[in-house]
Each structure stands twice: as structure tokens, then as C-alpha cells.
Image (cartoon, rainbow, N blue to C red; front, side):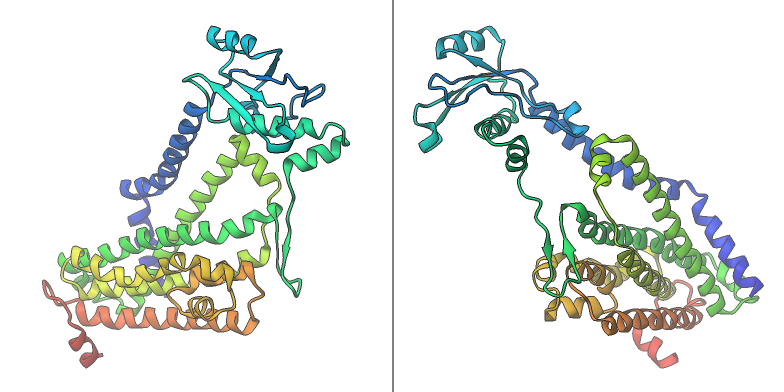
Length: 401
């Protein structure tokens, strides 16, 4: 057992303290940050803070007031100010002088057909039309109480509840839907990155004949178990660092802070994902280690390893059937099949009350397959470790196993 821990520590240090690990860790949040920055910049370039005018010659609105703003995002993207003009001539003069970005003209029969004419400049922001629509709606309800006007402007807070009362979805628990998607994506990325380390390490040690020395003092199963558990810890390290970046982002980005303030996370979903992700990670990592032992070079091993990682993304292709019919045949099969369960089961758990026996069978199957995968990886490694420059065929594998 002492040799197992030596292998475990050495394998962990070997990969974590390399520059490529740091690059892999930082590349994901940097990529997401760049995408978010590009999206924010795109919105910013289309946004125009300049006031806009409106002509209400037929007094459709009486004593109009600005729409109340709330949330920290209003600081970055405040609502456009609307200025009343007595006629189109005055509004046109203001537009030509650059005082406003455009003006709206309400027709005499606006209350019947909703006809509004918008005269704009070439620099009109994409936000002005939506802002004016909100401005109209809010002020047309001025005769109602402030609470009624605000509620109709903001819309409904719809809560969807299952017939048995076991599941409830609303804007306040949007995190319950987003979490399985985000966790599943991070799981897939972590498996590919850390599993790739294990696969490459096995192939390299096989090519440079290091294994011939190591195997004289430790059993193949013990060696592979140490490598696989180190690989698991590497994956957990990646996830922990990414979660840290998410927490930092929530603290320093106002819009995310507003969203997270109303979000709620179901503890049962967290426990389910942990119970499924851990054995699934070990199972896939062991399979990738076994692939490394059978292949003659890293490029070949990576191609074969795709057979084990590709099924992990299949649930994303069937998101709609899972959401609309979480107890259907497709959703049930994907949530119980070992290679698709890590993402399908947590996602299905959000939309329905999954039978306990199905969850238990899925977790038990993953745990059993994880143990068998580690054992099989040791056996396969033992068969392929001394085949320098040669690939271990499936026929030889089954004959000698």
C-alpha cells in the first residue's frame, strides 16, 4: 500500500506542477472570459445612451414618468431618457442638431391599432425601441396603482410545479436547470484533460521503457490504481480552481451578483452529481489508461480514447426529449446507461421525481464498473507493457486475459 501512495503522489505532482497543466487550467476561464467580453462588447457597441424624443400630439400619455430602474446592470446599460416634443418639427430639429438619437410619433388612433412611427439617425442604439415600449406600457398604466403598473411591466413570475409536487421550477431556481449543464460540461472537459494526461503518461512510459523498471517493484493493478486515483485528484483540482474563478466572477461582476442573489441550489442535486461523477470519472480514466497500454503511440491512443469520451456528450443532443418527457424511454435509458448517465441523470433529476431504484441502480452500476475498469486496466497494462513499439490487438487481449 505504501508503494500505491508513492505512485499516487508522484503522478499527481508530475502533472500538476507542469506548465501545460497551468495552461489547461487557465485556458477554460480565459476562453469563457473572452467569449463573455466579446458578447458584452457587441452589446455595448450597439447600445446608445443618448436621449430619444417622442411626439404625443393627441395626448395618449398623461404626465409621463420614467420607468423605474433596478439592478446593478442598469448602471452599465441605463434606460434611455425620453423627451417630449410638441410636434414633429421640433423633434426633427433636435434630431438634426444631434440632441437626440431619434424620435417616436404616436398616431391619433394608437390605442386602437398601436401605430407608432420611429424616425431615427444612423447611430440609433438597438436598445431604444425596447426601452420606449417599456416606457409606453408603464405610463399607459399610470391610472392603475404603482404596484399594478410595475407588475404588468415586469411580467409574471411563473412557477411550474409537477403534479405530485416533487419538482418546482421558477426564475428563482434557474440555477437548478443551469447547474447540470454547466457541471456536465466541466466534467467532460476535466475527463478529457486529466484523462489525456494519464493516457499520454502510460504511452510515454511504455515507449521509453520506464515501465520495465517500475513493474519490478509494484504490481500492474497497484500501479494503475495509483495513476487513476491521482488522475481523479487532478480532475478535482481543476474543478475546484474553476469553481473559485466562478465565485470571483460572481463577486466582481454586478449582473452575475444580481442573478446569483435570487438563485437557489438544490442540495440533493449536488449530492447526486457527486455520487455519479466520481465513479464515472474513475471508470473513464481507467479505460483511457487501458487504451494507453494497448496503443503503440500517443496519437493512436487518443483516437481510440474518443470512443469512451464521445458518449458523454450524447445527452446534450437529446436535451429536448429529456426536458419534455423526463420519464420517457430515451431519458430513462440515457440516465441509466453508464457512459451517458453522468450528464443525463442530473439533468433528468431537475425535471422529474426520478425513482429511487433507478438512481440506486445507476450509481451501483457506475461504482461496479469503476472497480472492474481499474482491475481490467491493470490486467491490460500487464499484457501490453512490454510490447515495445507494438499494438496489443483485441484478439490478443481476450485470448491472454
